[in-house]
Structure formats: C-alpha cells, structure tokens
Image 1 (cartoon, rainbow, N blue to C red):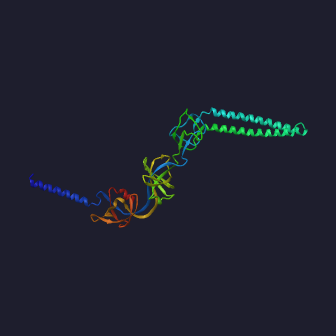
Image 2: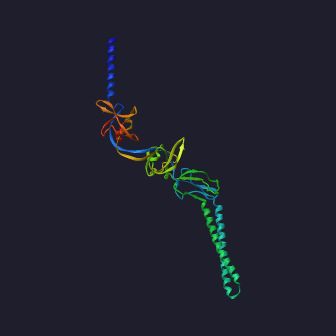
Image 3: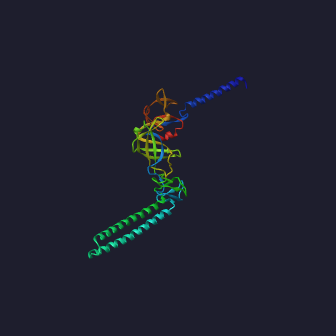
Length: 356
C-alpha cells in the first residue's frame, strides 16, 4: 500500500471515530435517562444513629433469696424459658429441717394452749364454791391467752420456714431467653442484703431504640411521631416504631451535643432483634403533600446556583431551578419546572422513575 493510500485510510478511520463520538455526545440518555417530573409526598425526616436496648423490666437478674449450694441448674445461655419455669434448685435439706423444727414448735404450742384453756375453765368453775381465789383464776386466764398467742407465733414461724424452703427453687419471673449464667452446679451462693444473681433473663420482644438526635434537629422531634430503622444484621428489613420519650438531659460526646430519643418498637419481628445492635433511625416529622420533586442526582450546582438538564431538540440545556425540601433521594422544586417536564438524570434512573 502506497503512503498516500495509508494516509487516506487513516483519515477515513478518524472521521468515523469522530462521527460516532459526536453522535454519542448528542444522545440525552448518555450515562442516564430522561425522567418525567411529577408531584409526590415529601416527608420531613431526621436521620439518627441509635442502639437497640431492653425496656425497663425486660432484662431481669434472677437468683435465690436464701443462701445455699446450687444442686441443679436447668438452663444454659440461649435457653428459652416461660414464666414460672424452674431454673435451678438449691440443696434444701437444711431448709426442710427448719420447716420440721417450726412444725414441732407449733405442735408444742398447741398442746400448751389446750392445757392452759382446760386449766382456766376448771379453776373458773371452782371459783363460785370458794375453792380457789380470784387471783388464781385470773392467772390461769392470762396463761391461756398467752398460749393462744404462742400458737399464732409458732404458726407464723412455720409459714416463714416454708417460704424460705420455696426460695430454694428459683423460677423464671418473665418469659424470655437466658442471656447469661453466672454460676454452676455445686457452687455456693450467699444471700445477704441482695439476692445473688446466677441467671439473667431477657425478653427479646420488649426492646426499644435509643436514638441520638443532634441538637439542631431535636426541636422538631415530638412524642408520637413515627419512625423506621434498620440494623446491619438484617439490612433488608425495615422496623417500625413510635417516639415515646425525649430525655431532657443532653449526651455530649467529642463536643457534639445529642439528645436521647426513646423509640418504641411496633413490630419486633418475633424476637430477632438483639440488645446493643446499631440502629439506623429515620424519624418522620411531617409530610409535604403534592410537592413537585426530582431526584437529587439530577440537580447540578455551579456558581451558587442550581440547575437541571432538560432536552432541547437533540441537545441538553441547563434549566435553573429553585430548590425546597430535601427528603431521601428527592428534592422539592419550587420554581423552574412544571409537572410533566422531562429532565435528565445521570446514572441508572429506573428507581427514580418508579419512585416518582
């Protein structure tokens, strides 16, 4: 091939490449697509990070109210228990002996009361005949009344001993799951001023979220507002809740002021949530209905002004817009566009088209 022909071929190839490039540059859907501007509801939201925590009463330390040796432990970490289920039993021989001792004292007190009553009645019958003095009758009556009181006292001792015996059997106060076990069979537990803890139960259906809201946003948060959140363990599940309380005292970390907002969980998804899970929380403050909105990624900013790209013939031109509320992936358009207009959205805008 001559040099002239080589040059000609090269020029033709370059011309074809430039034509293709120019053709692609004119296409409005290069790297994106056209989306129709529509109206939609834009909620005002507060984004916060929180932690899943047990509600008050959902996490209960359990242990015996008497000292003794743990003879039997019926559960382990992760065991699911029902209220009233036996968790563990102490060695009860000494407690049973105390019951027997108290019952023996009660029997003796009852026998003494029977004798004292009979003696009083006998002396009281002899008083009219002058065989005994009034003082002797009064003493017998006082002794009879005293033995009756002794019977009541002995009965109370029996009841107390039986209650102490019942404390040797530790039962679950709530439905839940065993969170931790702090002892083992054969270990001695000592109950002094506080009952020892050897099992901690938690009800995974009674959880809440502590969401830490920035001081800039806390003014718009009110009790009763709806909230949603996700956790890293279940990224495809959206949990729903309601704002139940706002702590008046701020939490300051690294010079950042936050307020603890308590969110009650409406649907715990059958206990799949766990305490200390990180929650990504969205609190809905109010909703702007019928707002003209476009995807955020369609908006460009330059020189302090905002604009979108709209088709004009075969080209794309800038259209200045005035922005309003941002909500998630969308932003309100206050001026510059009308419903039904077409705008260019870079990237895969299929989801934006469906959302609008």
